[in-house]
Length: 177
Image (cartoon, rainbow, N blue to C red):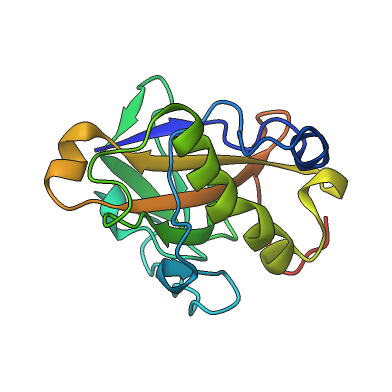
C-alpha cells in the first residue's frame, strides 16, 4: 500500500530560492544516494499493456506506465493500468528507492520532502523536456507507508498529472509541455 500526495506542488524555483527541499503535499520518497536513484532517462520505458485496463499492484509501476486509481482513498494498493493513448490520470516518469542505510524507517517531515524533491525534480525535465515551472503538467508522487516499508517497499514513484484534474491522453515523454 502506498500514499499519494501532491508532491512538488510548490514551484521548484521558489523552493530553491528559499533553500528548502520541501515538496508540499507529498507521499513518495527518494534516495539521496545517487546510485540508488533510477532516472527517467536511464530506465527502460514500460511496454503499453495489451489489455484495455488491467488492475494490478501499485508495486508494479514502471516508468512510462499510465494508470488510474480511486483517488478518494488516502492510500493506494492497486491501480488500473491503461494504454497512454487512452484517457488516464497519471503517468510514471521516475522511480527512486529510498536508501534504507540512511533511513531505518519511513522518512517524515523535512526528510521526506527532501527525498521526494531528490527523486522527482530533475527527473521531470529529463522525461518531459522542460522544467516543471514551465510545464502545463502537475506532479504527484507515491511513497511507502509504514506497513509497506515493513515489507521492503522503498520506492517513490514520481507521477505526471494535469493541473486542472482533466484526464491526460498520450504520453508526456518528450512533449516539452
